[in-house]
Amino acid sequence: MSTVNPRRWWALAVLAAAQFMVIMDTSIIGVALPEMQKDLGFSQGELQWVFNAYVIAFGGLLLLGGRLSDLLGARKVFNAGWVVMIAGSVVAAAAQTAWVEVVGRAVQGVGGALIAPAAMTLLMMLFGHNPKELGKAMALYGAAAPAGGTAGVFLGGVFTEWLSWPWVFIIYVPIGLATLAATKLLPSVASRRGSVDVLGAVAVTAGLALTVFAVVRAPEVGWGSTGTVLQLTGAAALLILFFVIQKAVREPLMPLGIWRVPRLGPANLAMTLLGAAWIPMWYFLNLYLQQVLGYGAFASGAALLPMTVLLMIFMTAVTARLMGRFGAKPLIAGGLLVLAAGLLWLSAVEPTGTFLVDVLPASLVAALGMSLAYIPAMMAAMSGAPQEQAGLASGIVNTTYNVGSALGLAALTAVAMSQGAGEPGNLPALTDGFSSAFTGAAAIAAIGGVITLLLMRGDKAAAQAQAAPASHGEQVGV
Image 1 (cartoon, rainbow, N blue to C red):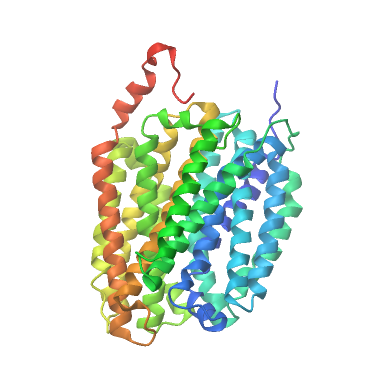
Image 2: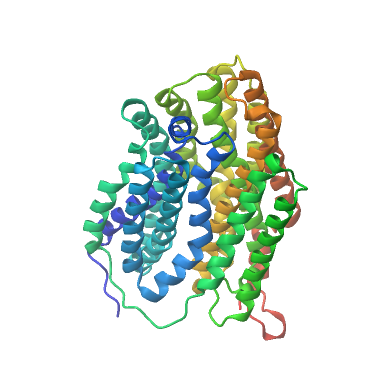
């Protein structure tokens, strides 16, 4: 008989703090980007690597982090993740050149890829004995994500305005050390035997990185150039190799049978397109506020707070109730279409615009769409998975969101650059470039909404399909 951990709620605080920090790491750098560009010599097109280096490493290695957590023990991997995160933060804070900054951000992403799945495993160990407690713990853990995003936007502005941009990374050092000191509250699990699909992890991460690199460089060297064609061909070969490896190895990172789970495919496609629309909006809105409207770092962070507060309120207090009444499919499709409407509104920005007219209302509409779609898409992807594959389904949907974020930002940066965003100081050209990026993001979100309506089964249909016995004795997910 398993014993209940008497310190489980204190342990949850440690895990929620980790979730808070991992998510904050994607938002805190936003308002610091223009200052980092000036100090480190990033070009307008290269600046996205400050974000994408983290996202590619984080998304590409999440499944590997989950596998290592299963084999080596979740607490050990959680601790290792924080050591790596601290090391990456030190490198990023001390960087004097653009490439060192990108390396630091990639190392941070590796740390995040170890922390996030280990934290989820530990949470299940602490609260899996009681469904009621597990639901409460998951709600508190989930609320840490939008709270981290909100705090990141605000703190990024504070640090950049009144200290300097390296402080957006320095902050992780004392917090990381404090978290490591508190991990004695977490349960310890012995390691077990098994193999690690390192080759598969390297193939998918390298394929994603090469794809983004090719898309970033294409506007400069030409989409039909030999370099671009070779890079995209190499990226496709690496991604195909990943799937070949998954089919061939005994213990793959991603058993391909998981894709038989009802709604997993459409939900992951929706998450990919959601990330591809939302993250570029957040990125270019920061640049519009500072490079066109002339906002300082703190004012820019404050301008984004209404959007992030709305996200936090809806995700924690409203969306779950709406799901209970309407199901996942209408919320995912509707949320993506509302996001598209907000992005299309943002595409009307002017060089002489104002926050109250050009930014606030449109950003709130976009945030409403995001808050409606994100949690239902996450739950739809996981709801049909057998219990023993719930962690895998969670890892896949987190990976697809991050992959979509990286590819969407790369593609829409190329669009923005081709329409004038590469001319710092030329406000009409910058605005045209940012407007084109918002328009492209709106198209991506709208396509996601339509695809969800066409491909995703409703909750009732999915439940019936899951309950029905598989033909010829075949089990779903095997």
